[in-house]
Image 1 (cartoon, helix red, strand yellow):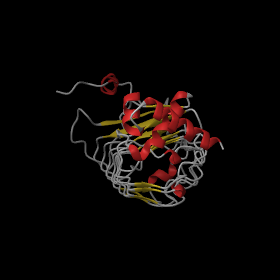
Image 2 (spheres, one colour; image 1 turned 180 degrees about the vertical axis):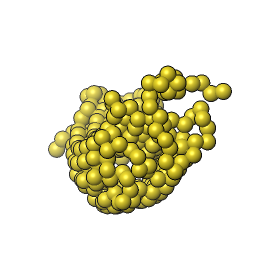
Image 3 (cartoon, rainbow, N blue to C red; image 1 turned 30 degrees about the horizontal axis):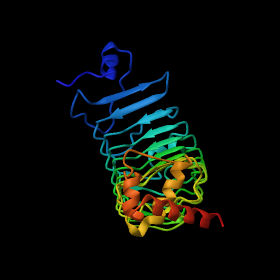
Image 4 (cartoon, rainbow, N blue to C red; image 1 turned 135 degrees about the vertical axis):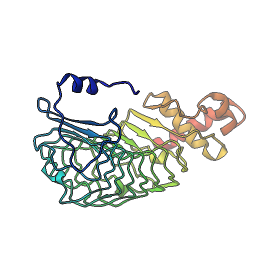
Length: 299
């Protein structure tokens, strides 16, 4: 028998009212949650095999949790349009493959939207229209391969965007244009093979950039040179070679001045032994080369 959660205990004590399920079936009495707390305005209905947003969510609900159901789409005429007071909407681990343009625009108070673990393939212009107060958007673990230009154009307050574990192959500057308040961007563990130079230049507030486990050259300094400092950068495990000596020197310069930091996934090639093998046979050669490159950049 599964271990009872806090919610189960509260339900047994009668401290949380149980709402009747609508057009849904609870297949496992130990895991199905269905309650509305009228003190904190939290609505929670998970593991109910719902195929659409239920119609009985109170309009004053602030936090709506519908994760681990079977919802397949969000349409303009969905009951979700009534949730103007909702600040947190959790739709994780459903089967959502389609979100109609404009279907979320009535969620004018929304600050956090969690859509991870669904089946979205394309992020379209208008999908997140009018979500001016949205601060956190989690789209990880979908199968997203396309982001249309202007997808996030209305997300003026967005601070954290999670796109890891999708099927992205290229990244262009117009994908994230307008996200001037973004502090965290995670595009790790995709299939990205090409990122245009200056793609991240307009991310004026970014402090954390996750790009590891892709297939493009994460060592290219031109991708990060105009980003604000200090910056936490998560790179792939790439080995330096004679072709990226200038990159190694650039990263060493950034590390030395404390403007760049790395995750534990960052390559170990910042040791002097690896610099020597990458850029020459001796430390003197490395130091001379790096010094020359640094002086060139200052001119």
